[in-house]
Amino acid sequence: MTTTHAQSRARRWRSSLEAFCRVLVHSNLFISLATMSVVVTTVVLADLPLEPIPLFIVFAATLFVYTVNRFTDLEEDEVNVPDRAAFTKRYGRLLLGIGVCCYLGTIGVAVVLGVPGAIYLLLPLVAAVLYSIGGIKRLLLVKNLFVGVAWGLLPLGAGYYYDSLWTPEILFLAGYITAMITIAAVVFDIKDIEGDRAEGIATVPNTVGVPRTRRLAQAGTLVVAAAVIAVVALTTLSSALLVVLAMNVYVACYIPFATAERGPLFYGFVIDGEHVFLAAVVIVFELLG
Image 1 (cartoon, rainbow, N blue to C red):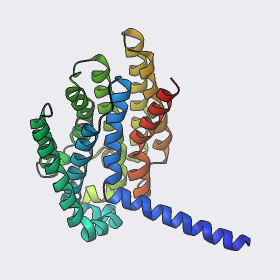
Image 2 (cartoon, one colour; image 1 turned 60 degrees about the vertical axis):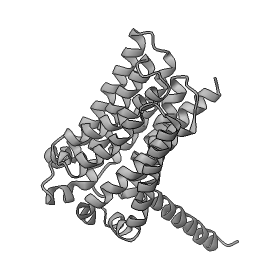
Image 3 (cartoon, rainbow, N blue to C red; image 1 turned 30 degrees about the horizontal axis):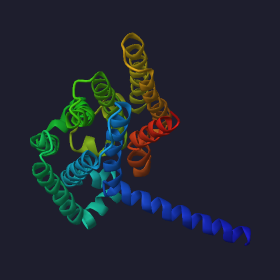
């Protein structure tokens, strides 16, 4: 095989891989995998049995909420992420139909099986309305904290399902996820500066600038890491929970590369992949004992 042919083949493989990753990101399948990863991390670190029902519930709810958001943010995406906007226009109705069916199916299954707290499955719908239609996303820092709290409910939901809601591990993970997702949401806004300004949406990046946003995000990541160490050291929580610091390192590594010019694979795959990364690390540590 000649060098030129090998290079051409490598480019085709890379192009195919990038196209596949874009589909995962634009279709919201990857972000749904990320929320499932939060549940996996919670279950493993809280020493709970891994069951398919809570994973399916989280996946379906995420697919529904984020697909709805793709339609409500379509005008902004046409400026910020034109490729994603084009994907939504072409496949969005199909994905929305799938998301709605999965979401309603999840509620139906939960009711039939008598899943504890089935009524709370309406919360994703409420969150979607508040965020996309209620105007929360237009409030500086409020939308970031709203997203952080929404993700922080995932460990609490898992704890409720397993009747372990008020255990220290569940509460610790809920607080940690809320803080880290809030930081990630602030960094995520860097890619949307132009579109957010056009829509009159105030964000940290378009208010204080990109360099300062990155510095604030790094400081926040360090503060959360210090808080994790302090909480574990000063309480009866297991030192095994320090494994979450792997995500702080991951976040600290991608923050310097966050610019407005970065494409959807950076924001939708690298940043949203932080919880997939953490779940993988947690599983490896669990397997290693």
